[in-house]
Figure (cartoon, rainbow, N blue to C red):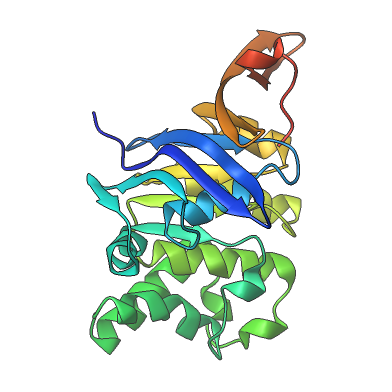
Length: 242
């Protein structure tokens, strides 16, 4: 089965340094893929490259069965693959919560009534309908994070790319985030330093190191209870921190 999103030998350089160096990655329909690795390893760059916000100097980006090269190619990709930025303030720019969540459907050409109906439906699902008329920049960090998720879900995406999605979330909203993501049909590519979150979400994991993507293993063993750990296969089963 062909991948929804793929990198094939992709190199992305910044400041004379290869952030990605021949990186290969595939995200398939229905899977929840964790991308782990140390700070500065290029995880955010990889996510941005998949949706055309970074352009490779070598290699191919393939999305939904077609190679994507130019901005016009990636506009179609970004309608189906939604990226959650690490900082919610980079993503939220409308006056109110409902405006931010309805922006994507409006941009896709939905009539105004239908776009706002879709936004209200998603906000109710996420448990934020009571915030609809709130000024977005006055929300807490955790509330902003969940509004970002709502805005992505309003687009009915085939794939979600999530960059540190549990940042600023308290335990209650973190649990809500996990329940929502586990209930989605969309494929997930998740970057997170929240180890417990990754272990709950991931069906597969890869490790980004030295600009390349390496296989990783979701390993389960029983002590007094079942625990899940992610190990880089090429690193002598050392724990991969992401």
